Image (cartoon, rainbow, N blue to C red; front, side):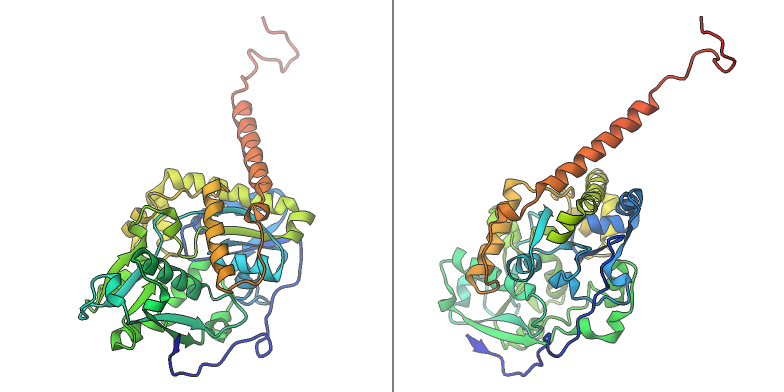
Length: 398
């Protein structure tokens, strides 16, 4: 594997102070990724907050607290935090950092990633890349999981294998990058919800955290992986690049590996000491997910502010096949296993674990039961007949 000739400073626990708010079980924080999830739809509905109000608990975005930086999103170092986001960081946390519970997942069946080349090059198929260079990013932030690289490496290997090739048939060129925006004082200003962060970053166009587009344009490499058709459409629209492989168009669910399915996790401490906090979150996710499934266009308008789809219509098309009610179906757990096995076999985690033992369906089941009981109570109470005649004076009816 060849290395790009550049020196980038590492971010480590030795040279960076990681900050998080002190533990208070009277408040629960959440964090999520800019992807399709009930949690992102809930930014404007606020239904999960309603569930926490019922039990007298404060519910807030983790970065609303000035004492907390961005790293809990990756290393889950807060017991009263619930994370809903990409798959690879929580796998890393559960395997090597601390024990957590998998509360539910949401799978996107058309998110496998694409392979980009320069439009002016005579490359039209993956097999045309034999003997050529494919870029692979490398985060120099050692505090967090290098999820971007994992999905690139997994996607590249799958594309090569599907075309009868292996890594030995190409040259993988690493591109280290700082990945240190988490430490930028301008990015540490407290914010109330993820939408504020995305707007601050202009997330649909800010690809500065990825070093590969420039390398491809200059011809330093011949191809690169992009997380999804959504992101690559920005690059392809310049007329300088072309897609020669798109895993999202393949029917095999094992190829949809772009840091998905999205996972909901809480710490063992929360699950054991305050299970009602995990149940309240799942009640909110079920309610929001059901609404989003029934109102896809309205949900798309909300998600457009937080995801990488180009606009509302693109978001709407993108969520058509997605069930936004989290679940722990056998297929979704098998998808989690694919990601975990790749991370283990490629050295991204040190310790193995059983995905089925990680899954904790009891919280989802309890949430569904409570919602059903509340709905039944509301409906039956609403249907109680009013007293016939008048009993105010103690008189008899009839």
